Image (tube, rainbow, N blue to C red; front, side):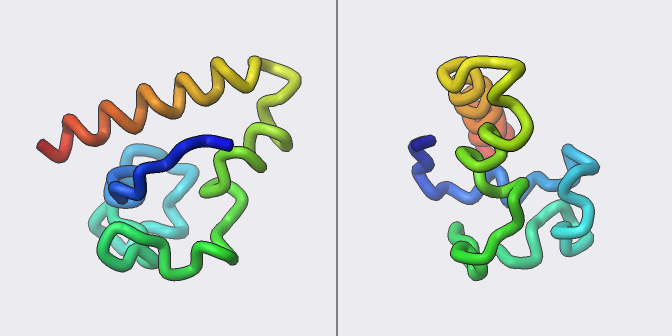
Length: 83
């Protein structure tokens, strides 16, 4: 399972990917973000579920380790952007 530190950075930069446009409140922040946490976590969209997204879209293309590594890289990039 992907280890998330619940910083909320990924949910504050939705404008960086058109895939998340329907969740964007208009300023790049997810309309379901409450502080640093998802207010609909148990019912969040598939695109917000890292492990399930891997299984559905990427498992035949890259290894799970590579997928996690790419997600961690983006996470760290977004954290630096917020600094």
